[in-house]
Length: 309
Image 1: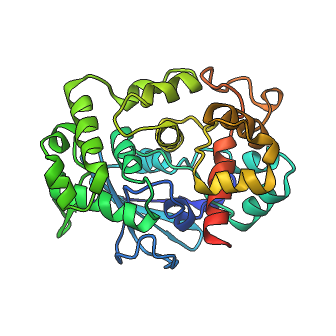
Image 2: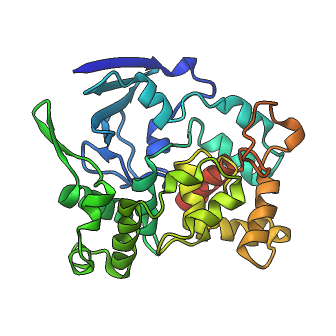
């Protein structure tokens, strides 16, 4: 067993592991006490995921992030939890906006995640009209029923199923597991990826709006789900998924950003939430269409409004 420690005081802007993993952006981690998305913080609890055939467990204690894994997971943990992001600078450079400043101040240490693209895609296909705990339950069930089982350190862990594994499921099978009308979307999308027809990873190098359009080719994926995959898996930190909570924020706080359709509203809220191009570093991604770090703002506002904290 490999183990390691990352001092959180050395991370720009710190880290709040609970907020990062239970803020509605990832459904591929499991909490050891089974209370993921219960709304209850449990200091020192372990969170576990399986990535590339490796089990990774993390917990936060005092001023350190501890990990244990089947591999040397330090670089993997840093990538999955975006620990290299300069969170202090992202918050400092954000627009002077009362709601945004309140969200950033209340939820210090919340970071974006970078989940594996296929698992992220399926999770957000399952997310339509569902509460976060129910989404997590669906994704966990898919892993248990179709994912590889890994025996390690006296316990069994389930990876999220590979595309070919999930493509073998039938619509009836997935309906029996509680996926409802999402079942055919999941099966068809898995078939598309397994056959090589398309893969969410292929969107990574495209300009932002082209990447969003690319992802909508998957069955059951509209613009909002596409934005979730871009933001929480593919490194497009300018993406702002227009979910119910962000639409509420636009209606109540930013009515001038309502462009009458998804594309125009998305563009306007990205500009409102993001760092202007003149303020970004010279080495920022060439794929960005503006509004850098607007996705961080979205994630904070989403969690702030959803929890009422």
